[in-house]
Image (cartoon, rainbow, N blue to C red):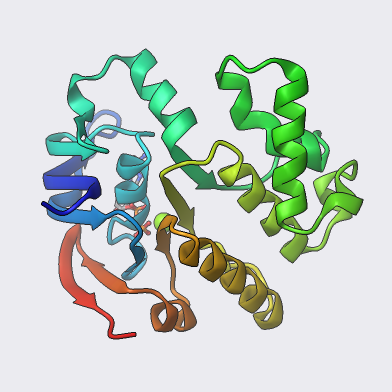
Length: 229
Ligand code: ADP
Ligand code: MG
């Protein structure tokens, strides 16, 4: 049997807004199996449900209907505590940095949810910063870094726990093309080393380097395509 990191079956998500406004069906029956080691791009127009899907894959939100197994375990049967533990240990998110913290402190944030002593946490954070080539900037704050450097820090933070899946919502969105290219090269290397990557993107260059492109349209999968590499 194929080793699946994530397996979503008939996932629906409806947002209920305040008072009289009608509920919003953001996902309407999504089936998605993600094999371990796959590099997957999620594309589709604004409002098609990409971020909603990522939030569910990342256990930041629960589906209204359907089932989601992460590393073989049914997320619906887990307690809130188990879910935050899974989120901390198995899932790497690339998201914006905390402006008040240094590079090293930002990278160490996910480790606070575990039980490691401080010295060990700092050591892991230092190694992750080194991995993305920013050791000389580890005591700087995000505002003192370029956009590309900030994105590297966000990647280091996502990887500090050695997650089984890396999630990124538009990681090259605000970057100029050379910097975006450098980030994509870093993600390529991570994928080559065996990491599973799920990335929301509008960037055609990503579609060229990943293994699979899933197109969402109105909360449903419109096209699910394996890329010959
Ligand atoms: P995308 O990331 O593809 O732009 P989203 O997943 O953010 O799409 O949104 C899908 C739909 O769900 C949109 O119609 C959006 O307005 C709606 N939506 C997203 N988040 C919420 C929310 N927290 N409350 C209500 N509606 C939401
Ligand atoms: Mg979005």
